[in-house]
Length: 278
Picture 1: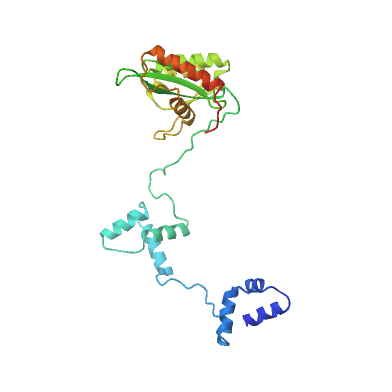
Picture 2: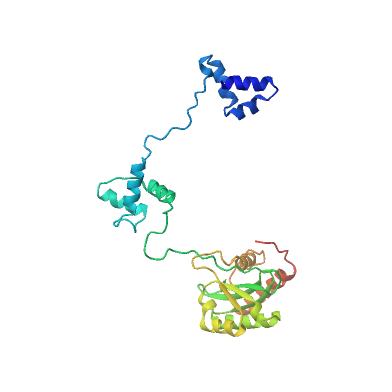
């Protein structure tokens, strides 16, 4: 019957591929039926059969009654399967239980405690200069093994300009607070409209630094705990600095030498370096 319909359509001017698509068979299937002779002309498509291990409606209701029963209603399917296995009982697989709960619209948080919530941190988007700053502290090796000088640096993430820096012989939140005040005064903008992002180090969250942030009205922003790439702009700046050909291949002899080198780098970075996005 199908071959006859296709033949009539082709005779009337239809394309074979389009005619086969209309009746729901492929051209290769039609060709095989022709090769099988008269017996092959019958439509022997049987569709998709049910799996041999498919659960019956009775078994599906039994699984739902089990997972919603008093002994298991606060457990996840993963825990239910493990607990039943300890008792030598097998009802259904973990994935089957999840599927049945999902089909019954019961795949929800099953414990009495509040479900865990994932919150997206607020995004700071800079549309111009002096809106969002990023800052951090990096180590500069000193001549005495195991000692360092500490470079404090603030960067405008919109223009990539270094807007403030200082080199000290210690890491201290009071020194960071002094530099923040100098940066805000140098930018000449309303501090309440300025956001400052940093990591979660002691210098970033020390008492003096936090008090300075509050007094200036600056909006603080911090990296998420355990997330190492939440402060990418200043980290990229530090990498650019330490991979410069002019970066010393030996430790700095003194604090003045470190400050002099950083001053040369800042002039090059702000006025000569061709910036690109991260």
